[in-house]
Length: 269
Image (cartoon, rainbow, N blue to C red):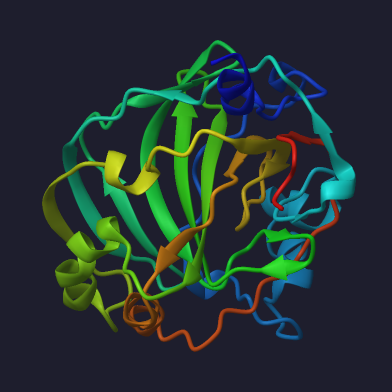
């Protein structure tokens, strides 16, 4: 039991306390027409920080996400414990934001406790391909579960996916709604009660680092928690998500980060 418990508790730590950073609102811009993921365009990632004064972090920030989760930067910490969550089924809506598909929880979907702070689940959304890479490898999809504390600080749990023979159970339940809002930018539909526990899964080992929102305003001070276990998504499900936002292959812009990564051993082997 001792060795098993050790493996479970090998989690990521913060070198700097979250309180040392400005409160990061768990709010990304919903106005896709104001920015683009395409490098070289006037409103592309390299120009995000110039579009609006309040987006300055996108160009000048020092703790920007996403990053490459390189094992050479990982430090083992043995005493952080679980990502203790108390998620629950809640009323939700699905929104086609043009650059991604978001499930927004209109009711109380529960929370996760990180370093003694309770962060409430506000929404989740998908990116394809993944925004974060692991030792330079980009995965087929990444799910972000976005949380916000009572003090408006943000924490995100990220899950990585690769295409395989089996489909993702949570996405399978969402497929009818994805078809409903496909090709309808800014379309929003009520989807009834959704249980986020199906999206989170049970994996316990994760990496943590301090970063930012990955779309404007690129606010820093976000506590990132990337789950170690890579999950499986079907090719059909991936195509459904991409087609819903007219995306053949999303171009992701990477920002440098000076933040430390603390995590499990062995990291992403």
